[in-house]
Image 1: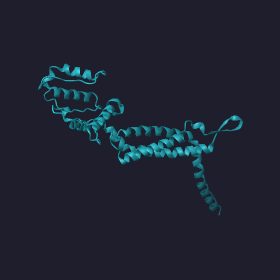
Image 2: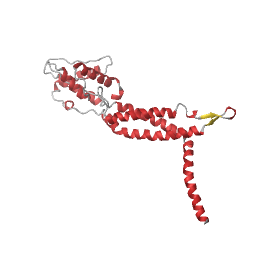
Image 3: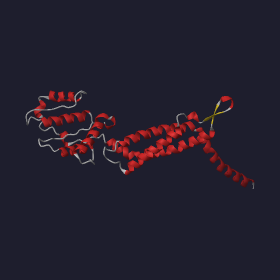
Image 4: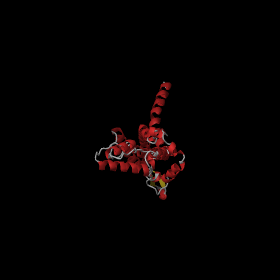
Length: 259
């Protein structure tokens, strides 16, 4: 009979300890939970900004990407409310003006932080497929025209021309470099050589090479450049295409995230 009583008492204690232990865990890990949540939400913000790079100008985001962004934005706002500016704000004034911990407030904030942390980590995990696409953005394909040196022999004896062009391209005051000369001396081949040199020196840079004939076809030129930049034109007008190309090229030049 005594053994049965002890067994029942042990079982009751087992059920009591778990519920009692959880609040103490949240109180004990109060600052740790808030700090962990704060650090992870900063990572989530960075991932949210990086995922934004997936969306090309003039395009609508894919439904799964848009849904992820909405959830990420909501959780970031929620976390700001949970973390607050100061972990010590969950205190109350007690005897003789001393500050004492508000245990109820700390328990609730720590519990919320632990729950939000799980949501943040889940969003970070879901972002992995999106980020892999963004990271591949910097792996510029090795275009066939960059692999060919055919016809470059005409310039081998004048390698200083290539160096002069390369120097000009690195001059912040130079916006355009022109190559001129009579037909058949290898101007196009030299331009390809310059592009190849740029890609070798800066693998993350985007290179767009378009051959323009005497008979201009603006729409075709815009389409070729857009394809090289991964753009899908929603505005089919010449002006609309030009604006979309300008916005994307400006990002390529100004925004270091695109490099």
